[in-house]
Image 1 (cartoon, rainbow over the protein chains, first blue to last red):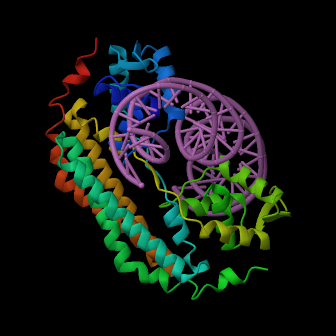
Image 2: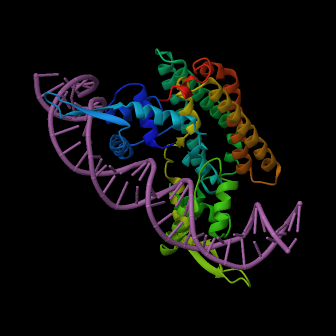
Image 3: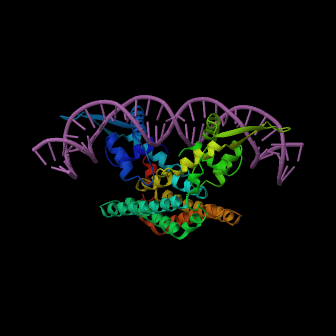
Length: 181
Length: 181
DNA sequence: TGCAATTATATCGGATTGATATATTTTTTG
DNA sequence: CAAAAAATATATCAATCCGATATAATTGCA
């Protein structure tokens, strides 16, 4: 599944511009997929070439024209076919966890702050989700919202209970920073 | 943090070939970072050019030479500097969750099977982690191992308790598959 | 003996990111 | 009220990275 397919999916929910599709990725699909302009605009171009979406230029008085994309019938079939395929494995990359794997090379204060910030960030994310969860939504969106909360909550609890494992492993003081030649 | 940096990190744990670095990504860093040969070999070449790692060709009687990489002193300093930077945000992509977001377009049987397979997969992953957790390891590796188990467990529980939200939303029967022209 | 898996290096096309450029309008804030 | 900031909107580019593929010998096992 690539970004082209996800754009098709977003367009099954209604017509949208490239800009609006990006916002949907950020606001509603943040938990599951990321996409930048650099992939969305080329994706829409390709989809248009393949006639899986159509594009109408909406004149605006003062602003430049808006390009509004709609999914076509063949786009819907294509999307259905893609959805019926077995989904590929998750791709995950966490610089936070990667850093923790080398906690023994870092000053303990750095490791502690890192974990504190992570917990604060996850709490922040949960409260953002809380805000969105109450708004009128489909069952699917509620499912995803609560899924995010469950995972974030599990992470916070794990970090609180096990952070000592890393903190006792890290360098005391910040010797490492002073060992530089 | 890019793959070059992670390769440096892996080399702080001991000398290794490109092949062994790939194995480390798969076996020990699976939960936090993914890297393919297509990025590892070019990364090692670049690191060698920058003198952050050194490379010795180990002659082998019958096999082709093995290229064993070692981190250099300046490589260690560079790695430390990178670790002291604030880690970037997680990058996550789940085709599984993306598919669930369109559950209402899919036959209910497909959605149910998808969730069943996901649960089975997470259980499988937990049991793999269990095996590795007991082996002699650093505190950090135990931390990561148990982190993975905690998150996978939370996901399983959430799916079991909330799958009905999606299954009641999906198409009954598989009409959709027959609507094709 | 024969077949599959492992060890080992390497490259290529294509997908994707993050940054940047441009320009107008709306909202916030001092 | 004016200035600053954020939002609306499209688009491209270099750098990064993935997945597939090629090659080839060895080891394990059935």
